[in-house]
Amino acid sequence: MTRLELENIQGYLIRGYAHMLYSRFVYLQISDAKAAKKWLSQSWKEMTSARHIHDKSKIPPTHLNIAFTHAGLGKLGLNEENLGAFSREFRQGMVSDHRTRLLGDFGTSRPEVWNWGGPRNETIHLCLMVFGNDKSSNDDLEKDKIVCLDYYNELAAKFDENGFIELFHIDGKTQPDNKEHFGFRDGVSQPIIEGSGRVGDKDDVIKAGEFLFGYKNEFGVYPDTPLIVKEQGDLNLLTPDAGGSGQKDIGKDGTFMVMRQLDQDVNKFWGYLNEKTKNPDGSINEAESLKLGAKFMGRWQSGAPVTLFPDADPGPFSDVNDFGYAKFDKDGLKCPFGSHLRRTNPRDNVDDHGKKESLKLSKQHRIIRRARLYGEIYEGSPTKTTPNGDVGLLFICFNADISRQFEFLQYTWANLPKNKELYNDPDPIIGVKETPELGEEQNFTIQDEPVSKTIKDLPRVITVKGGAYFFFPSINVLRYLSTI
Image (tube, rainbow, N blue to C red):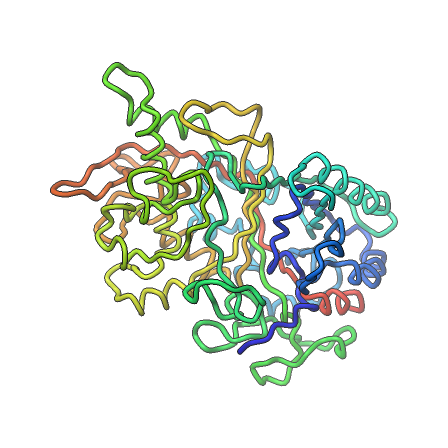
């Protein structure tokens, strides 16, 4: 059984900090590498680890984690040879021409018009993640906000002397019921990292190497970790490569973090669903609109899987997650093949593969999601469609292989319109093109007998506002980086 070095792993990967309803993601440049390394030589001790705290009264009221871009590691002083040891995806970043095509970032989502992370924006070197929780209350966002911002203000007051320039920040929020702005419960199905101490269904237990360097992955090998090619810094702080190369491993107990700011058009989403399900007199058929939305998503607003509850939401709050598509809905008659969640985690029913092979393939493409809301806390519905101002999701995920995990999910399982028996069906949530090519259809097919139903002309309801790839190092590696 794999045992993780929880004390050395930054906590946001394993824990998610669901009890901390308010957070601030601070994007910084390094203006003085010497001062930044001096700060890091002390601040690595303040970083929140993944260790278990069984006594909840002893959980600190604030958490802090940190991640670096490739440019940030270079600015800090990591030399070219060692920077080159990181994966191609991380080195190139999210906005190379190839990545843009893979991720479908065109039109109003093209990197040239992003708010941050794009070629016309200032270069980000690191992201400081600040979380707050008022221990007297786990359901009071305002109290959590005060705790978080008080801690942030303490840190920000010393940014200049510590060699940092704040470019901007995004405030992240979480509701106790984990509803996102379209109104659906989020984060119900998360992988369990083997050795993390979490328990759950065996089909959700994934080898640690899918999410952490230095451990074997679902292929039975160690992931391609960044190694020290040229001696630099205090190498005694690093562990040897588990793969046996003899080189020191800068990746051990770390991973890659993907961030994307996804603006959600709640009005367009529910307006479309209402239009496609309206009564003969033109009035809203709320029940049918909710049902079609659940088919799009793959879960009801409560989080209950459509596979097990095809006709109505059992509500109001569901943690049901122990199901397989091959076992309960092989033909897609309950949960359509093209639904967002079925596409991005097909579980035991990948294409024409058998159950065992499907589970194996699904495990090889899992990510750990740590999304946070931004903007007004808002739960959309057929009769509630207009939030105040921009709202969206700060999508965050962790994976050891950006190409095989995050990018594969986006390009192969979400963006491609061909899936199982489907031919013109992109993912209805994240795969729709804003301006399809001439003659190109973008449909959503609901499997039925004797004839399937086609919902045509899907709207794009997500706009990418920014994004970047980050290295999320271990706590020991943070200490090492202060010595380079």
